[in-house]
Length: 133
Image (cartoon, rainbow, N blue to C red):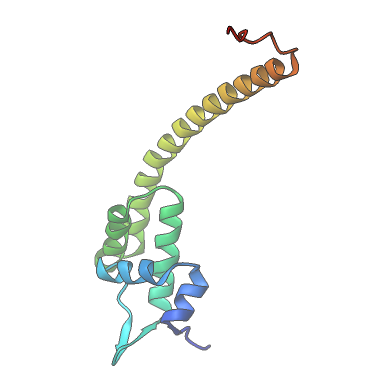
C-alpha cells in the first residue's frame, strides 16, 4: 500500500483551501508537515488532521476546540479523543438547532415581508404629491 504524500500545492488543491489557510494552520501548529529544505511534505497524518480540521470548522467548532481534539489524540489516543468530541458535539448540536430555529424565524419574516411588498407593488399606484408652482 502506498503512503499518501502531498506537496504544498497538492494539499491546497485536495482540500480546496488557500495557501494562506494552510500556512496559518501550520503557524498555529494544527499541522506539522515534514520539511525537505524549503519544501513541505504532507503525509497521511497531516491529511487525516486536515480532514478533521475542515469537518470541525464546517460543524462550527473553533480552531481551539479542534486543537484540543488533535492534542488529546496525540496524548491519550482515539478513545479519549472520541469522548471529548462526543461532549463537544452534544453542545454544538444544541447551538446549531437554536440557530436553525432563528433562521427559520428570519426566513418566515422575510417571506411575509416579500409577499407584502409584492402585493403593494401589484396594487394600483396611489396619486403622488402634486407639483405646486
